[in-house]
Amino acid sequence: MQNVLMVAGHVYGDPALSYTPREQTAVLTLTVLVGPTPGGLGAKTEPVEYQVKVMGPTAEHAYDALTDGDRVIVMGTQRNEVRHDRITRERQSTVWLYADEIGPSLSRPISHLRALPHADQAVRAKASPRQSLTVAA
Image (cartoon, rainbow, N blue to C red; front, side, top):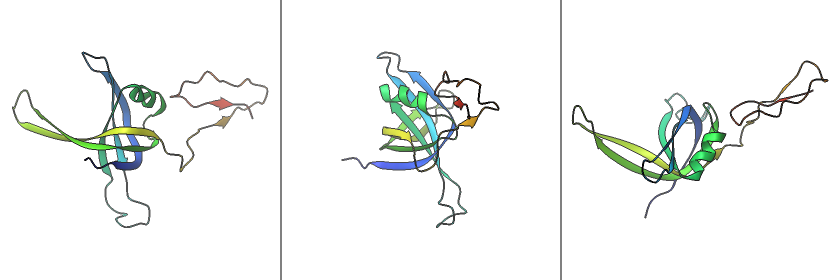
């Protein structure tokens, strides 16, 4: 039996999308920083850094939806991956949070809308998921 872990934090750096060599399964890796609650216990401590992996179609969807600084909720299981450095032959261990579910946190506003200087300008609706949408006032 595995314990399910749920964290809410901010994406740190841009997520990286890659594909496995054989099955061509999408793999998204990202870092989520979980900081202390402002004014709460441990408010002066450093944020906890989680290395997150997302697999399959969810990885592609998350890659399109998430970018650096976004508030995110991740639910999954922790796994320890051990590898040996090719040069030094040292054993290196990384704890990953394998996400079963991932998405933006809606506890804070996530849309970035800004008004155009003139109301007669058209709405720019061709913004990709990684760009902000500009609307007429």
